[in-house]
Image 1: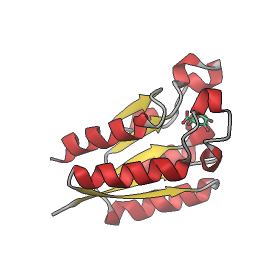
Image 2: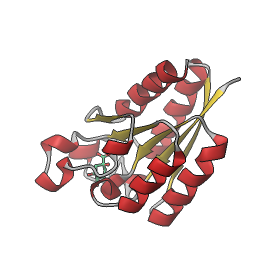
Image 3: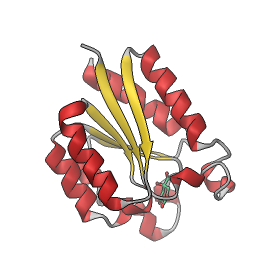
Image 4: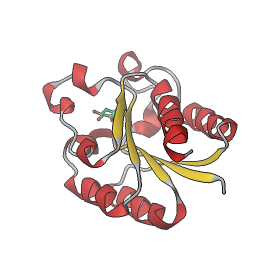
Length: 145
Ligand code: DQA
């Protein structure tokens, strides 16, 4: 059966393309969504792509993913650095989860180098701009095949 992936994006990621382009690039989230959906199909998978600015909604989506998807790709935005609630949801989902970041969080302010989510994820991809999502999809395809 075709594998299903959900890509969940957290706060402020709706603004990329115009938000701090020197850090996040000029590609919009809609453009990333289109590229991800197309690349997933090419890899024989199906991807849904969502963004929300609300922590509780991220948690609800992770809970729903438990029954509906085979793997989560998650860019938690700033929640990466302090949301124990999102970490607990990822742990509870018992699904493989790949954490992604556009920027290299280890090369920026000290507070960004800590992810409270990464220890409950399969791995983290950080610093490749929009390609972080494509690399995560390729990793997902390898894990699910
Ligand atoms: C981010 C990195 C976070 O530190 C930041 O708060 C974001 C975006 C990234 O994709 O590089 O909102 O998750």
